Image (cartoon, rainbow, N blue to C red; front, side):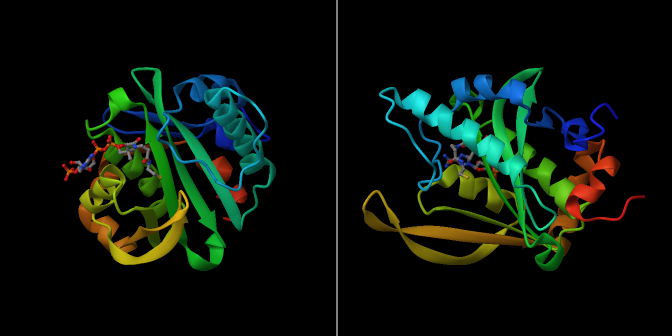
Length: 215
Ligand SMILES: CC(C)(COP(=O)(O)OP(=O)(O)OC[C@H]1O[C@@H](n2cnc3c(N)ncnc32)[C@H](O)[C@@H]1OP(=O)(O)O)[C@@H](O)C(=O)NCCC(=O)NCCS
């Protein structure tokens, strides 16, 4: 363990093609450079009067990074992983737990640079964090939500075995639109056998940060 005070920085998830590591401050600027224009950011995020939209979005990503680690608690955590292929950053995968010790449910969100899409990597990186959630974290369910026309995000969920879990009508660009919800249970995940394709390293020292007893 090299990060005794914040052991999340030693956590590693590996799939056939990808390595996922929790984001560090050193990754931030490079990830902001990569952030694709079609990635939705929190509409409630603080923004500043900056003309260049890329800079404005990058500033939001910086404050989001600090917020997630700065407000981390065992009952409300959001872990952003940098996704690398052959050592090169190609995207980000987030795993989120709210009231996790009670609800045992995780949510996810992600992006890939456009050149890395449609190659199965979205599915691999989601499977990586699901292996962590349903494995050492002991989740009972995973949920995901996407606009009805986000076929890639919905495709990742359906392809991994999530089932439809209702819709919400929400404001989007000034009009009402449909957000689709999906859900997968622990048994459904275990039936996929996909956990076998994911290696998890460095988790044990992180257990207290998730409210789990030390081993
Ligand atoms: C969402 C995203 C991460 C998915 O990654 P990806 O690498 O493109 O997806 P994959 O190649 O792993 O595809 C997974 C499944 O979805 C399907 N799929 C992918 N893109 C699709 C599309 N545009 N239309 C229909 N199906 C699609 C694939 O066929 C595959 O299903 P299969 O295994 O049954 O063949 C990526 O497209 C992205 O970064 N999008 C922009 C950001 C975003 O919208 N993020 C989600 C919001 S939280």
